[in-house]
Every structure is written in structure tokens, then in C-alpha cells.
Image (cartoon, rainbow, N blue to C red; front, side):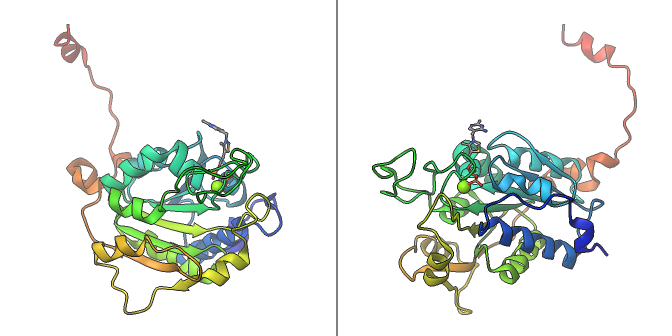
Length: 285
Ligand SMILES: Cc1ncc(C[n+]2csc(CCOP(=O)(O)OP(=O)(O)O)c2C)c(N)n1
Ligand SMILES: [Mg+2]
């Protein structure tokens, strides 16, 4: 069994004290220890931003690439070896701004990966510009007179694009987030967990009290299999009115299972042998 000590790196996170990334970090490590995720069965990819520093603080096979591109790297890893649990840590800017096209198309294809979306409603690392989830009229460094644009409704977008698992959790609810990460990984398909993350330095509005005061848990009577009801629920966002929990879940074939050569066995298990391709090349002249 993997232990928390084995997941630790020598570096203590340099996130601002009070940053929601600490809750996400703790919840993910807790999920990894509970589920025995180690370097033989798990890999993760992170985007660029404060969230992306996760690669420095969790000792598992990981990759941090270009801004907005963690999802294509993760889908590549999953296609090459679908035995692995594959996670993406991505920011609201990374996932929905620079990487928006990757997000919607990976959802549409139902790649069997788990996207952990750090939604602090701001570009954190670059010190506080408007992101695609910043609320309309909110003043930021890039829009000092107020954001003129409407934000994305993250889970509405995810479900409409084809995500087969869509949930929202407050980042500092460590036990709840940890359980949701495990559930999202168990789901066979494209899972999105929107994590409501305080950025205490560059978004004074989305503070821990803002989230604790205004979130409520979806009731047990809520049916996450009804897509129309789920899409409607994702539109709800207001004072004392931010639902958290599992909004939507449906079983559909994953992208990987649609390819018989991958479904039969992971690509990495195939023997690579040298072949003479000169005859094939002749056909191209
Ligand atoms: C292609 C590209 N564009 C812009 C940047 C500059 N940049 C680095 S991080 C960042 C914002 C990240 O915001 P978000 O994804 O919300 O992550 P957070 O820092 O809030 O965790 C930007 C714009 C970059 N590195 N690469
Ligand atoms: Mg952000």
C-alpha cells in the first residue's frame, strides 16, 4: 500500500497561505492512499498556472506541458495504456480559455480520464486577470472597470459537450473532495470535477466564507441520471444557491473501447518489431 510519506516530495508548496490548492492537494493524496494509486497504476498531467505546480508536490508519474494542453497529453497517455488511472489538474483559464477546444472535444469523445478543474475564477499565476469563469462586472487587473463578458457555466458546458460524469465540490471540503475524486476515477468515461477554489490573493470575492455561506449539498432525492434536470441544475448559481455534489452520471462507451486494437490490450503491450516498409513506400510514389 502506498503511504502519504511516499507521495511527498521534498518541496513544501509555495502556494499562498490559505490557497484552495492546499485542500485539493490533501484531498488528492488522501484519495491516492485510500485507493493505492502509485507509479505502476497512475499518472497525472497538469496545466500551467498555480494549480500546475501540483507536479512538484505529488510524487507520482506526472507531466506539465503547455498552457491549455494537459487534456491532449492525458488522452494520449490513456490511449497508450488504458490500464492507468489518468488525472488532469487544470485551471479555469487553462481548461476553458487556452484549452477550451481540447476540453469540449475530449468530453465529446468520452475519453476515460478524470479532469480536476481548479476553479478560482481568475488567472492566479499571472496575478489576477479575468478568466472564462470570472463573473460579469467583476473588476480584475485586465478589466479594472469590470468584466464585460458572461462567464461559462462549467458543468453545463461539460455535460452539453458530452462529459459522462459531472460534479462540483468545494476545495476545502477535503473528505468530500477526496471521495468525489475516487468516484470520478471509478467512472468509466470523461469525468469532470469542478473544484470551487478560493484564491485569497487575487479574487477577494470567492473567499472561503463565500463558498461555505453559499453552497448547499444536492439532496438525496436528486437524480443524477436525468440529463435535462442536470443541465437545468447547472444553471443555478446565486446567493445561498450554489449546489455541490454529483450533477450527472451516465454510462456510455469510452473513446478507448471504440478501438478494437486498444480494447483488446493496451498499446504499450504490443511488441514493436522492425518491418521492411519499402514495398509500402513504393505505392506512395
Ligand atoms: C500559451 C500561453 N499563454 C499565456 C501564458 C501565461 N499564463 C501562465 S499561467 C496563466 C494563467 C493561468 O490561470 P489558470 O489556468 O486559471 O490557473 P491558476 O493560476 O489560477 O491556477 C497564463 C495566462 C502561458 N504560459 N502560455
Ligand atoms: Mg484560475
